[in-house]
Image (tube, rainbow, N blue to C red; front, side, top):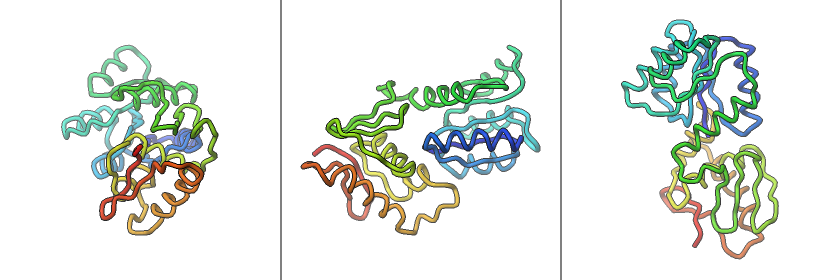
Amino acid sequence: MRILLVEDEIKIANFIERGLKEENYVVDVATDGEKAMFLAEINPYDLIILDVMLPHIDGITICRELRKKKINVPILMLTAKNQVRDKVLGLNSGADDYLAKPFDFEELSARIGALLRRNRDDKTGILKIGDLELDQLRHNVKRAGKEIQLSSKEFALLEYLMLNANHVVTRTTISEHVWHEDFDSFTNVIDVFISFLRNKIDKDFKKPLIHTIHGKGYTIREE
């Protein structure tokens, strides 16, 4: 899952970015409003964390402009302005949630998870395909009850495949949601990580779940 973090205070941005990466999110960082607008318009993010007080373009304006452009990615506003009127202004500008500074990272993480689950039928945070189970909250994976150890990038890739189960995902869309903004989608890195996943997810089981759709991409499904 790919997140755009818009925060001009470097220490706070570094703190949030580090915490999100530890939870297997891919994070792009913008420290001013202009860069935030540019990145939000060219990249398909799963969620945006948006500070209100920013250089060049403020967060309220960014939120309004993104909604005008029909960019409907969930937006979580993170700001020192914590009066009721400030929260109302943020939510009315198109934000989905509002968290005031100072904050506890555990609460930020929980709000992110809730926003990402909002449009899914299953809101437990547990993804299942056949006997394969991925717990988004605890960041663990099991197949047929056997726990499988994955690297952070393997987990992110498997999570994206399972979020799009029974649908073909191209290498381009995988690179957009699982890798950083400067990732070169023409390399074979995605194929390598798919191979890593197959060795851990499918190798010791009778029914493979990860399938290559030649000329198109990959899918995870139960045959």
